[in-house]
Amino acid sequence: MNRLQISIYYLQELNYRLAYAIFGTILLFSTTYTYKQGLIFIFLPKGLSHFVSTGLTEIFFTYIQLCTIFSFSFGLGIALTQLYLFLRPGLYTFEAKTTFNLLITALIFYICLYAFVFPIIVKILWELFSDYSQNFTAIDLTFEPRLQDYLYHLQQLNKALTLIFPCLIALNIIQIYTSRQTWVKYRSIAYITAFSIAAFITPPDVLSQTLIGLPLIIFYEIQLKFWSLYEEYQKQLLIRQPIKSHENSH
Image (tube, rainbow, N blue to C red; front, side, top):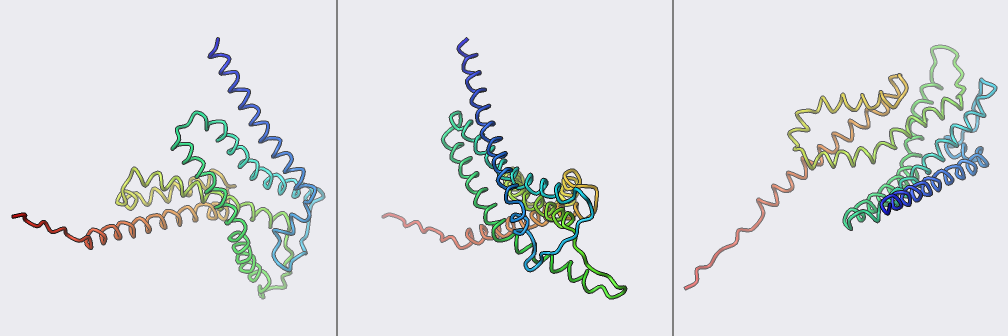
């Protein structure tokens, strides 16, 4: 009976924490929907305020989609924090410390990523592809950007950036139990796995799968390169290590 009461207590606590996460997500959705037009201007390229709409309900569902993605991104962080607070009493000290450091690192990583790196990537991609659209001289072509298409491509870019941190953690965990030679030997399998993951989480088009699969391959190669440099550094330390001289005592 005592074990049953304890189980019910933990289930109630888990329900409360999930309710906090759901309530926080709904609150974030309501807040972002209130300021939906200002939120869109944050993601627009600098100096551009002209988009076209071809559907009666396109603007409405675009607002809903944008606010949903924005609120669920923060809601996931709230849910993970509540899950950590729920599991912390049952963790060892080093486990709780490691999990806490991982959460803080992920928070700082994504804040820096979306505050500094994301706007630069959006600006570079916009200038690259808009130049092709505006300088198309073969026929008389007028470039009229569509808001829903623009936000759709931002969503695909967001998926690619969101996968960065989990992929780095997974690669570091795999690195502990494998060798660099294994990574080199099964490199082709890693490439196939990257595009399989991209095909699973993206629509069936080549551009979306490339935006997801190519960064995964790049992270794999960067991890492999740093691993090689680290092994070379360790070899140089062993070579430069002074040899201790043993003096014979008389």
